[in-house]
Length: 174
Image (cartoon, rainbow, N blue to C red; front, side, top):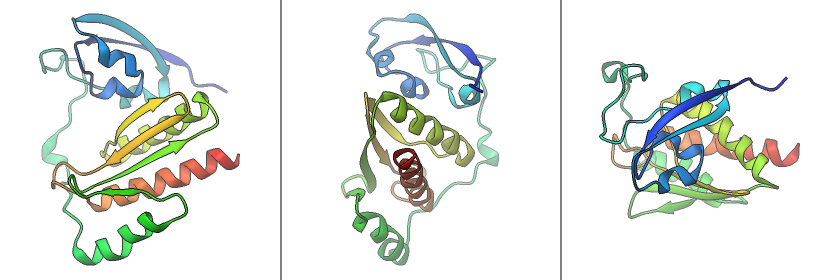
């Protein structure tokens, strides 16, 4: 049974952070606009963003930073063992040394499969409170993972990269 759709109304101006997963076209607005988008109800908690002036509405969910566990940068031993696995697999991730980030482009059969991948990752990202930088065009999803809290790669990035690879395999084999 398909998830019911809900409507999200957002005020958009130039760049909408959380709503980037909905449509790359939203980030092209130059002036303030009102836009309503239907998304699966399961993703309703994953879509949040600030208004055009960087303030949050009173109805928007807020993150209580006092309860947030901050990540630490990977140690030398973690880098040599865990990171190397991701960089040497059949369809490897790339290490962006200037940003201390991981990058990979995923290719799917069509837009629906790419969107399904992004939905799975969005739910994981909310559960982990760790969100990827990504861009989607048709069947391609470009992903960059880094942890801004620690200024580089953390265990969260490695875990998310491994899960993304698993999601890709599930979708392409099914």
